[in-house]
View 1 (cartoon, rainbow, N blue to C red):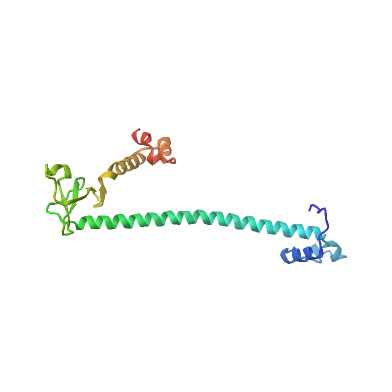
View 2: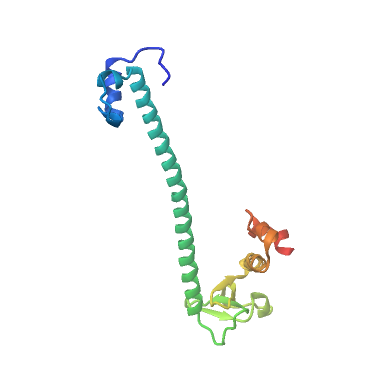
Length: 197
């Protein structure tokens, strides 16, 4: 080991010895008796202090590495919690929309318009606000939704985004090799050019 410019103090040496674990000494290696265990196992104080510092530095690096990896996991947990929250919100919205009053059979792929009466009752209509005529609808317009084939609902203002994501997913399934790698690249799902090709 490299010698320190200044000699280690007795206190530094004692602290270092408490941290350092030296290899057990064998008084008779390969059947040959060692004449002086003290001389063969002698270590300079600076060597012990250096060794203790190396151990301490390694422990700090290992802990820092563990903390960094745990932070990545924590971010992933937050992301998954946010995804779970969104799923629960979307599920509640879908259930509420299915509970809205309706006098016709709803067909997947069609857009329906939600209104609210003064009584608080919500109901679906096939007529958009523009289709009610000059007087308009007497009830409060709540939004327009497309019924999907999996019985979920997509708000009209989000339909383009959902359509783009579905198109990207279909392209990914149908593609192979380099094109698939391009679609999987960061931002691939939001890249309109990648989806159009």
